[in-house]
Image (cartoon, rainbow, N blue to C red; front, side, top):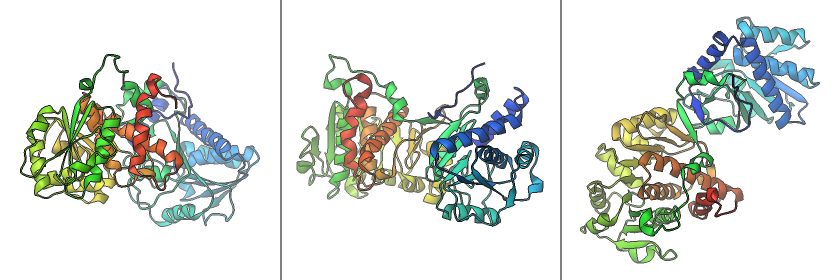
Length: 505
């Protein structure tokens, strides 16, 4: 029987809370692994992470709830005390409600000489706080004493290690349920929860670790994962070396449409990103005022002046794919070009102002990729941005059902779906330095470049999102503050060639 190992590399499978609970139940009922053993393993792994990440910590505060999450906390406290650390264990909630394996661990803590104190507040000085308050079953907002306890944790200067998931964070959506613990690190058990990687999840989980608790690998075949985590390390394996006899016609001709008068920057960023992503030929249809200047410094871009009454037909005829939206505007010029692009019959990447035009007159088609940020997604669905962020997975599903094709819901933990039976993809790379004007235009150019090179839309979107995020992470090595969208451009070429021995990292 193969067992999934304890590893710092995170799995790519993501699950909902009910699926992880099902794995736990199967392990106990069908594989006859005692629940107390699983709890002991969980507490042991937390203690191992504590020692590895905070080796100088001598004073530990463990805050336990009344459920299994609290049971894990009792194990951590006992192991820490046995190792000679000073441990303060604080209990929140009625201790008479502790049942089952959690009660067993609470009794073992007391039998080992440990004391349990009610939660009146946190000590002024402690080296580390263990959050074992609430688990993955949270369905309503945290209130009352529980909310006050979480607020106290967040105010404290000590680092926080969360057991399985930060208390107050919805494990399915990444939504904060009123208030949530801001952890410095989280150790998730059995299956990674999808909400940890999107919505508010990345803000609250800190560094994410994982342990399967030695569950038999066969258990995981009993559930279809709810989402797939992607990153460039994995996605780059889908690229192949280029043939030695290749020519520019083998790598597609992309037409980018945008850049109304005074808005040339966005379409220039998108076009240069497309060229750096390996498109054979890149043409830009832009406002006549911009055309003479747009390729200064990048003469490889073929820039065409298109007035509002002129046809794009000659440019469309030579193209393999179209990207439309960056700097397009919503005036007559932009609307005319938008309508021509829709009528072209070519695969499309639709972004920025083109999405705003789509929101005004919704249509559905199968051959496009939409790349909305949460605000644009809200306009497309007639919802507030906060509603989109409250359940990004549901918003992604609604976008695909309403507009068809491939949907890319941007933001921390960008989500992608092509409407097929495959679970949605979630990109776990990227950083806050990418939250700057023009970053989305770079993504548009990258995805459109891959589409023009012949990748099917779903794969082009997943590859593009992962490449964009990895470029952002490389650029952020010099610091997140002050990053510009253009800083991603020089990172694209080395990332695209790392697998083939043509570039040394």
